[in-house]
Length: 290
Image (cartoon, rainbow, N blue to C red; front, side, top):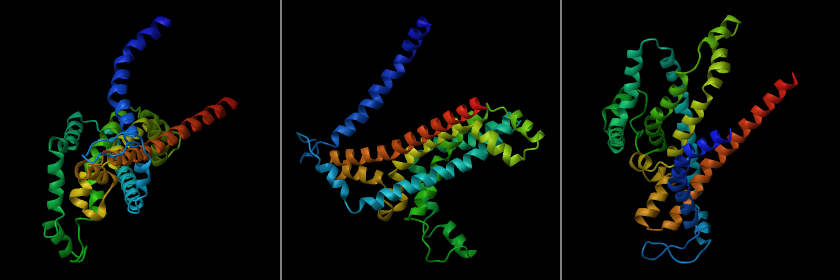
C-alpha cells in the first residue's frame, strides 16, 4: 500500500508542479498587485496600500458588475440547456458517421479566428444588414429597433461562442452513460421525462458541472465581445480590466478588478460544491438508516 501511494505521488507530481507554477503563482501575484500603488510610468510602485481597493467604490462599477454576472449566468444556463439535449441525441445516435459529422459541425467554429467570428456577427446584426431588413419586412421588429450595440447582442454572441464548450464535455460523459437504466425505469412505469430527469441528468452531472465551469469562467471575463458588439453601454468587468491595463496603465487597479472577478467565480462554485457534498452525505446517511 505504501509503495502504491509512493508511486501515485510521483505520477501526480508533474501535474501538481505545473498547476502551482502556472496557475497558483500567477493568481497569487495578481492578488498581491492589488495591494501595491501604481507607478506614474505605468508600472508598479513601491510599498503597500489599500487605496486601489477603495477605488473599487466607483459609482459606475455596481452596474457593470451586475451586467457581467447576469449575462455570464444567463449565457451559461442557455448553453447548458442547449448542450444537454444535443449530447443526449448524439449519444443515442446509432450511426457513427452521422455522430462524427454533427461533432465536426460543432467544432468547425474553432477553426476560424475568434475575432473574425465576432466581426461576422457585427455584419450580420448591422443596422443596414439583410437580417435586420428581413425582420422589419415580416413585421417582427419596427424599423427603429437596433440589433447591434446593446446587451442582447452581447448575450447572443456569447451564447454562440460558448455552446461548443458546453456540448463537448457533456457529450464525453453522455457517450459513456448506460442508457439501459432509462429503459429499465420505463419498464417499471416511469415516463420518458421522469427517466431523463431522475436518471440521465444525475448520471451526467459531472459533465454538466465541467461544462458550467468551462463556460462560466470565460463568460465572466469576456471583453472582446462586449467591446465589439455591445458598445460603451454594455461594458463588462473584462472591458474595464483591459482598459486599466492597455489604456490607463494602472496594473494594480486591473489586478483588483481581476481579484474581484475571481472571487465572483470561485465563491459560488465552492458553495455549490459544499452543498452537493452535504446533500450526498445526507443521502448516504438516509440510506444507511434504512
